[in-house]
Amino acid sequence: MELPLFPLHAVLCPGIVMPLHIFEDRYRALTRHCIETGSPFGIVLIREGLEIGASPSLAVAGVGAVAEIREASRYADGRYDLLVAGTGRFALEDVDVASAPYLVGTVTGLDDEVGDEDTAEKLSAAAVARFVKYLELLRARDGEDGDVLDIRVELETRDTSLGDLDVDLEPSAEELEEVEQTLEPRLLIPDDPTTLSYLLSGIIQVELPRRQALLEAETTVERLVHLLALLDREILLLRHRLRLFTPDLGSRAG
Image (tube, rainbow, N blue to C red; front, side):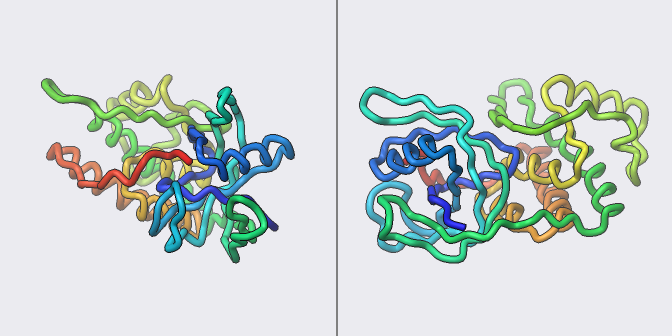
């Protein structure tokens, strides 16, 4: 299958909605093509090179996300503002640089393998509990500027129930009440472990190579194991009011 490619210094995960500002001619052409044909495009992480202008040494990740346009507004000068939703993953097999103004990839869709289902359910419950603690620690203390998670998602969701957390964790009644107060109404938790794993992969604030590794995980179980390790790291840093330095690699634009 062929898919127009949009390389970015960003990782899109399935179920996450990403805003894009389109101003470069080749990506205006990509956007027009996708709007006119109703077709998706692929977002791939730039490992080396620039998002805009000529970049002869551009290197991209081998796994990307299928992006479908949900909203599009066009400026008089031809620029676009888009909202795109991640709807799946693909492996990039080859890149055509000549047939269109933008890159065109030969891609293979990647299925979502769960792994052991019982393990996935238990890891999901643990990930929800860790994520609640993570959200609590993100809140600003007195005299601090708080982090804001400005993330949009596109998922079928439900309210979290008490049973969701009662797997190997044995939370107290007070802890369960805190979970419900923290999550409701701002965030609802997906039923499916795979959907949850992508949601958390797109929300938690981690370095791009780590988010890419989450996207590339071969099974849901593997992704959840990595997520738990990252959440533990982030919780430790937040408890000490520390954060890792990440250089600004540019805005999500093209």
